[in-house]
Image (cartoon, rainbow, N blue to C red; front, side, top):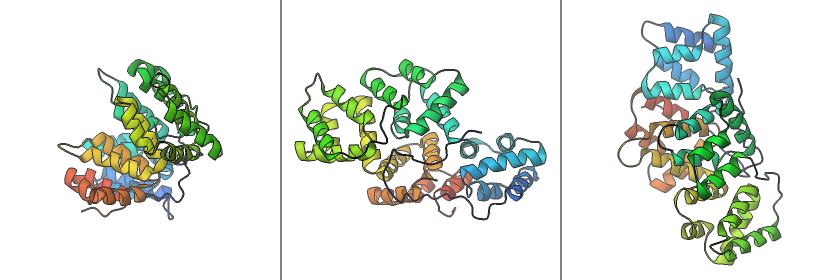
Amino acid sequence: MSMYGTCRCKKTFHPGNAPTVFPSRFFLVREDAEDLYQALHADTTDVATIINILAKRSLAQRLEIVNEYRTLHDADLIEDLRSKLSGDFESLIVAMMTPLDQYYASELNYAMVGAGTDENDLTEILCTLSNAEILAVRRSYHQQYAVKLEDAVIDDTSDEYRDLLLSLCRTERDEYQHPDQEAALTDANSMYNATSDTRWNVYHDVFCHRSYAQLQLVFNEYQNVAGKSIDDAIDDFFSGDVKTGLLAIVGDVKNPAKFFAEQLHATMAGLGTSDRDLMRLVVTRSEIDMADIKKEYETLYTATLATDIVEDTSGDYQKCLLVLIGEEPQ
């Protein structure tokens, strides 16, 4: 199985990311595989064991369990899980067992199939992945759907937003660019002095080609040059999906934990819950920076992420989400 793990490569420069899911120090793959087999073939499915094992193992360890399960029992663990579980809990467990490149590919396809397009999902995924991650997702997308990811984006988006996503899909960002204060000032001045006719070309070049470390300098210099934040400038000059995309990049550059806290809150705000988005964010960030996200969440909303999950979800689905974010099920 392909998997690119949780390495953020050269895209981001934020040190000390704090996950809530770690590789188990006492990992015994054969024992886990056997315990899962027994849990799935008991008279009543032992959901507690399933959660206790799978939500407390890294993705790499879960994939080892899949292979060992097949070796021991000549059976497909994921198919057995599907046959015994249901609803959002089933979807969450299957997401946890899916290599990240395949998972993101399926999420992107879901966002683009059918009559409408879920631009928020496209933005969240494509505007925050590293080049290496996007390359892996592109390969998986083509393997799974016999369509190039870039072609799917072209068919389902338009105008400046399409330009933004295509550049990100094509991994045009120089992630190895060293911070250069003089170049940052040049970019900031170019953005500040751009006219309505040239503004998008300037922003597109800067946002899609500069390293994250360089973008941080550019944003700081823009504040000095313009007397307002880059966020405010984007609000003033852009609208719609391209504005959302640019702001996502700004958020991921400045404070990814805060950005993803906001994304998580949006899945549970108002009536109803966007469960597909909620589980994707929890699954993908749990091995990267979920502990940081939880802190930002509480600062932003004076409520804990766990409290909101409890209010918006239920049952085994809720219990598994709580374990993934490092909390005890209620």
